[in-house]
Length: 448
Ligand SMILES: Cc1cc2nc3c(=O)[nH]c(=O)nc-3n(C[C@H](O)[C@H](O)[C@H](O)COP(=O)(O)OP(=O)(O)OC[C@H]3O[C@@H](n4cnc5c(N)ncnc54)[C@H](O)[C@@H]3O)c2cc1C
Image (cartoon, rainbow, N blue to C red; front, side, top):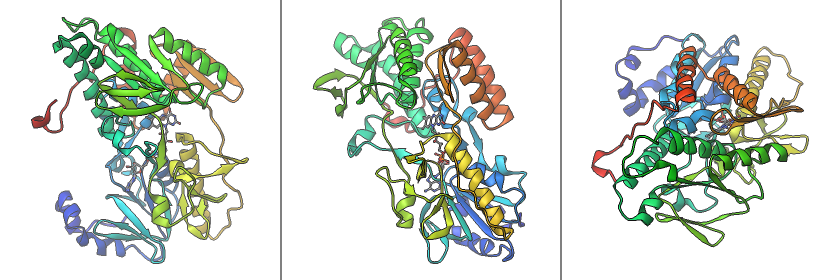
């Protein structure tokens, strides 16, 4: 990696407010080394960067956050089982030993395709190859006003917001004397019964019915009502019907009310309206739709209905052989169907794109098209119950939970994180105690 000029080392904050000073340094990358810019250090971007470690290229990873986030465990942060740092790893530390990679903390705002430059607020970055791996955001199906009432679960900020609202709901109920208002505080509605909604519902049930039981004097947290709402006829569409049915039964046993065929008609500060029925609830969580990031708009490329960029068989944007789009931002069709927005798609595409670039830089062609190998789906419902579908193998129950546990630990980035999370789980699964039940406020003057 190139030496960092003195001006860059003075003060990291200065870099952000006076970014022009770092532009000449980026221009000074040796011309002989092709510049690969990767936007987004999620599953796809980070795996692409690491797979380029031995290639004769200069890699720059740009992300608006300084950390890689393990999204599959976000719901455990939202429900106080884990702390944010335990499911994150700083991008710099992940790439610190990779000499041909550098990291830039910045928000990308566009791409100048003609000039081959990535645009940020006050600076731009030249590239020879560009990998866009900027993930997805929540989609409220045209009801953007619902976002403030019903936060989604895609970032650490959203997870700690949900945690605050969940824990505050019990505190408010403890102080409330009106039975109807108290019940509204103790009613939690989750909109969307995909894997995230199902896992969240099970975790909230554990929080209310087990963890908090002895902690309050004026309410019984077991009176909490947890409603999981789904517009489609059944929950967990990525799983086959038999496993989804078992998960439905497991949720019911945890006293989660599952409402299928129930599209949400309205969400406001008093609760939700589902199929004409109002449910009074002070906490509503959005686990329904997602839409791709803005990469399609940056490129002016053709997108699908979810805003995902339609890419060719080598993950490049048609007409732009040096621009790759992958993971949740890309719409890749395999065997006539678009690939799902899951971590394995992003990881495999990241590694594939790196191999294409490495071959091209070496002057070789890369004839193979990308092909996704489905490694299966899994979800966990409460304690000791998981559903797993890998190829023809299906299981539900303790074995499913155990496989979920082992695989999530394996894929978590960082040895320290694996160790800490394993310990937290040991405590949680044996005692129901959750170590991260903090109510944190961004602005103490605005406590509700
Ligand atoms: C709550 C939740 C649970 C999930 N559970 C599972 C699961 O159990 N199994 C599974 O396989 N998948 C799961 N997924 C899906 C999986 O996490 C995604 O498919 C995967 O993260 C996609 O990887 P990606 O690289 O495309 O994007 P991401 O991992 O989302 O990374 C995108 C990166 O781009 C950065 N970025 C975005 N915009 C900009 C910008 N303008 N400028 C700079 N940087 C930017 C972001 O900061 C982020 O680091 C879950 C997702 C969520 C939200």
